[in-house]
Length: 392
Image (cartoon, rainbow, N blue to C red):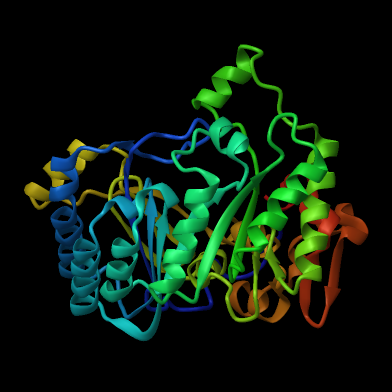
C-alpha cells in the first residue's frame, strides 16, 4: 500500500448515524453462536434497560457522539425477550438525548419462539418498524440440529402475527450448508421461506466458530461440515433463485426487495459512525482515520462501571491511514456497490488502483471496474477470504 501523501485524513468527522443496542440474554444459546450472551435472568433483564439508558446519558455528557440517529438496531442475544415498554423507553431516551430522524429505521431481532401477537403489536407501537426474524430454517429436523427453540409452524405463525401487527419490513435469516445437507434440500428450505414473502433475507453458510459446542463436536469427530464444493453449489443455487424472484443481492449474505436493504448494516459497511451500548457492543467513531471502542462482554463489570459513573467502554483499535484504507476495501468489496473510486480518492488522496495494484492483479477478472466502482463478481464473493487477504 502506498503512503505518498499527508497522513492527515481528508474528510472531517461526520455526525453519528446509528445506534446499536446489545441485549445479551437468551433462553438457550445456540451451538453455533459465538456472540456474547448469557442465560435469561428475570431480575437482570428487569434492571437492564436502566443500565442502557445510563450509558446513553453518560455518552451524551461525554459529547463523544452526535445525533440524530438514522438507524437503531436491537441485537443480541434475544432482544425479543425484552418488554416492548422497555424498548420504547430506550428509544425515547435516545431521541431526547441525541435525536432520531423522522424516518429512522428501527430494527428488532426476534426469535420466533419468544413472540406473541400481543408483543408484536406492542413492539410496533413502541416505535420498532423493522423485524429481523431468526428463523434459520423451516425444516424441523434442521431447527433441532441448530438448537433452535421454535418449530417451523411457530416461525410461520410469528411471521403472520407480525404482518397483522403492521410490520411491512421483515427480514428472515436462513442458515445453509448444514452438515450432510444436500443442495436441493437447502433450495427447498429457501423456497419454503419465500412463501412467507419477506422483504429481506440474510443467507448465512454455517460457520464453525471457536469455543462453541459445534467446534467441540468438530474436534471430537461428531460433526462433519459441508465441503467447499457443496457450500459453493448451494450458495449459487440460492443466489440464482433469489435474483430470479426479484431480490437484490446487495451484500455477500444479504438480499432485499427494492428499497428494503438494511440501512443499519449498510452504514456499518460504509464506515459511518455508530454508537454501541450494552456489554458486547462495539462503537465506531469517524474522527481522524477511525477509532473503534467496545464494551467488554462482562455484565457485572458493566453494572459496576455505570453505578460508579465510570466509562464502561475500552479502546479496541485506532486506525492509521493504511488500516483505514484496508478496512474500507474489506467492507466495500463485500457489497454490490463495491468501492467508489471518487470517494476513495477524496478520503485518502490516492486512487484505489494506485493503492492496491498487486492485489487487483491477483484478483484477475473476479474484480471489475465499471462506472467508477470496483466490484467483486459472484465467484469473487465465494472466494472472498482468499482475495481480500492481499488488500489487508
